[in-house]
Length: 471
Ligand code: FAD
Image (tube, rainbow, N blue to C red; front, side):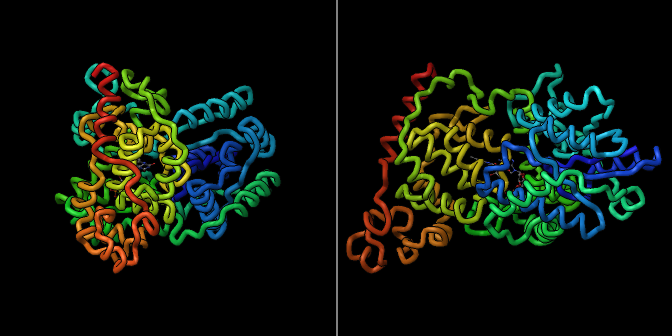
């Protein structure tokens, strides 16, 4: 019999429970293993930054497999076509193992795959592995889901944490059977996708992920609680792209942090709990993927403005910290958490643009895009989410900038026009006297925009917009 491992968002060999389960089944039943990835048609034609990074991670994992004498087969076409091909071309396919993930998209796709092979007797076996605690594990006494982070996290912190899966990396070969190429179409479709991927990523995949984890644990986690809010320093782990692609197991990260201990690790672990929290919310309330969690805010009247949306996307709002954040996103595919909060607040509260527009832009541009965390973050900033920022506490982009980038080091890194602007004016360059503008080679209105809105005024409008909904 053949036992297949379906790789989805888990491109690694360490702590891979589906791999472990497949190997054990093959050992017990004297069978063989094979690996595959399905190139879903919904993603095949979009090679924006997020997918670009994802596909290149898949490709690097494929190479990693090849170097180890293994093969990651690629299937293409609809779910039905792909799984029919898999079944027809694999001799005595018995069971398919995979790590569960829970977005509405994944659940729908999985159902389709089950339906396709229902009559064939091929079994599907999901294992945990994408989260520290699975979404149905941490629930209230009455078995209903939590809706607020703090009590959720209290329970989450108390629960025993799952151990890592055994690492069978070196032993796969005894059960690995080199199957013929499964699908020439799949291989060709994947080559086509890769040829449309343009960006160069420096440190892709498992080895790079483990190295970054080690470096964070050795040198930086200690300062995490103090440095995590300052975008100009490398105060956070920057592990998110590896978590998103599964090049790194979150359970490995958790255990490394717990072993380390201390205040930094404690704060860091609570951030890992946020990820589980948002996944849990999306699992229990899938409609909130595109609807406000708080029903009373489902009829907010957002403003449509293509020009404002474009100014925000391109980092030309006239608010340096917002522009620096957006340019960091556009240039690197990643944005610091503090800036995600500031830019999201700005789009929704200063431009009054629908948070779904921001969510969609981030989904295309973030190399760590995670539907649950992204929607959670956006609904938090838009005050429509579970325990979101209250709508009357509107972030001031200038105050945030003064607080979290006091010397403007981050702003200057990404908004080159402001490079020579003195500290005194860096947060509000439009207040610079003309003489100073000339000296700094930054003429406001020409080299860098005037503020596109009056924050005080927009803040008031935003509060009224929410108040109108019966608050
Ligand atoms: P660290 O501070 O080192 O944290 C370690 C890990 O904990 C992160 O990699 C992440 O997995 C998890 N984590 C930390 N903060 C959060 C959080 N607030 N919510 C959920 N998980 C968290 N995170 C994503 O992974 N994907 C997204 O698409 C995403 N979109 C966001 C959109 C908005 C508007 C906001 C406000 C936040 C969003 N976040 C998202 C959460 C957070 O900004 C990132 O996880 C974090 O910046 C990643 O950098 P890091 O790995 O250095 O984080």
